[in-house]
Length: 76
Image 1: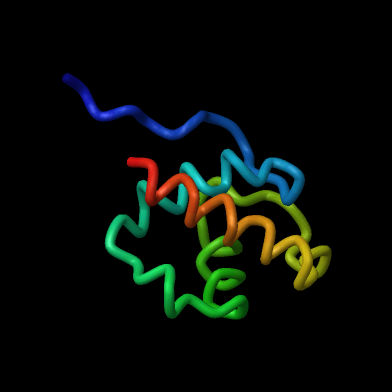
Image 2: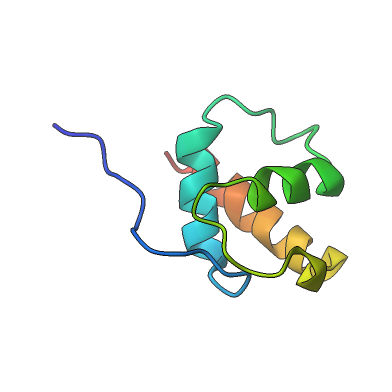
């Protein structure tokens, strides 16, 4: 069974699920219980496929991405 790859193409803030898939692939061992919003932000904007304006991020958006990240990681 081959490992699923992340979706191709650039990542934008509104593509939170695709961002989560990239985070799971790049940071498989991150401790989500201790991950802060600033650390999450830094992880996202340094993803190779990230193409959006980093200044558009806000706490509500990051909290939503973190929630999806946690749900997807615990369902694997």
